[in-house]
Image (cartoon, rainbow over all chains, first blue to last red):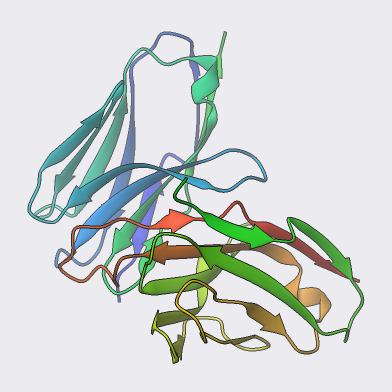
Length: 109
Length: 116
């Protein structure tokens, strides 16, 4: 059974810092890996989708990587801003989405 | 604009009073699903549908029903709501289930349900 774990559960950084969020999964036979952002009490916004044949995807200040052999994905946020404060969720996609518990990010001005 | 639309956004109801949460997508997606999100438990799948008239249980289907009579609509029905169904609900759609595919999921804005 696929399980997805995100570390850390919460992270607080000063504005401008580069940071890495981690996502690990138990079954390396994944299809796709999708990163989402969720603001408090709001919906999920898709950030990046890494297809199973890819190793990374980039969008603006965000870069997501996928290493199936080690069962890990990372989300790199460059030059963090207070507006990046949110919960970040990774989800394994294979028949259904299996989510991690999320990393709650706070970027202080 | 391509989107998944859920209604209502907020709902407070009493135990036992039947309710329906609607979900509609305008992207001609075949695959739709419902999730609930609870503190400490994360997002869990309730039901999913691979196409019209094809639905199946997810991880936490008890107390819920769904139907898929049209491709764009996938309503979630609570026949007799109970307080343990108080949660944040999300509808999602995708061009397909994702097995070996190259598509991501699009989520609705959520429905916050409180059952008293």
